[in-house]
Length: 440
Image 1 (cartoon, rainbow, N blue to C red):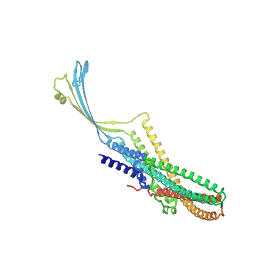
Image 2 (image 1 turned 60 degrees about the horizontal axis):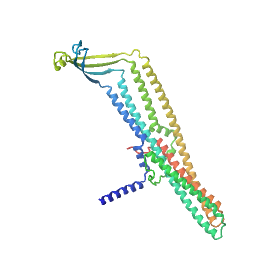
Image 3 (image 1 turned 30 degrees about the vertical axis):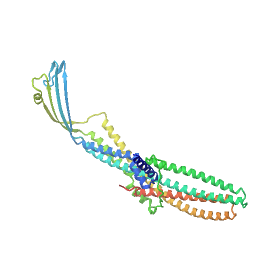
Image 4 (image 1 turned 90 degrees about the vertical axis):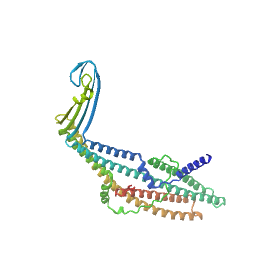
């Protein structure tokens, strides 16, 4: 028994350690978000609802069938269901009926409703895909933000380590009488500032992890971490394409336009359905009924066969005046169609604006990254020169600290522009039809 408990404990500890050691890759985060995000689950429910609507539309072509039965005890003056005459006595009675009805013509409303359900099914599929795209972009952005914060933290810790070494060396020179005591104050201030930056960046890193956890619906914030993968600058030639070419591809692939087009098609179908109410409807019916009465001198089975009846016929309904209800539905459908057409125009304008913005963002982000790299190289050389002068006593502590701070800022700017360039490129690739996630 003790051995069994030890094994279970070790298994539990092993599971905990495994969970803590897990490092999430970008692909894993994207896949997990697509499967578990609440907004995506809600869109999947909308798609299931459209399946139900399609089933109901198909059912509109089928005949209806209803049956009913009634058993009662009658007292006083009551109608005998068999003789159809009043009887002032207590008696028991039973009746049953079955009726079927089928629509033969209703202005093709059934057919149009089925077509609408198919359009709505397609539209909900586009909405689901759009939701997945939006979530994927958000997850990718959060993931890259964590990577940036991690690398930023590494840079700050590395620079602070250099500052501490300089503090130690400066203190030795002061103790040896080579430098005045005041020369260490600037380095101490730099050290304190860098430690504040480290604490702030650690907090920022934690917040960025929590943000991604919440997006993935992961509650274990403390142990969540992403893999320390290196995401290189994307090799893409999209910047060589014209914005017009990218816009053409975007209209074919971006789900915003597909959703807007589907909404227009649905609105047109709604208008056609509402106009069907102006036309007459023709339906066929068939019915069967039977009855029994305790006061009639026949047994139960005989009465059911003797006093049964059937009805077969056609029913025509011609709309003449219904308080402008049909006209009102038609007018509202026209307004809604016009509204969806405006929404389509706005979606196309928004897409054009977003594509041009994304294109310019990539161009500018690339230039900023290249400029930041050049600045960093220059800052490295300047820092190396300052360090040599500082070590031989030709540069004071304040100027050396300023050179170190300038190098820190240059390194941070390279990281910032790098991940900004990566994300901007991902957005432009998305508009060009290159998916963030692989279709399963």
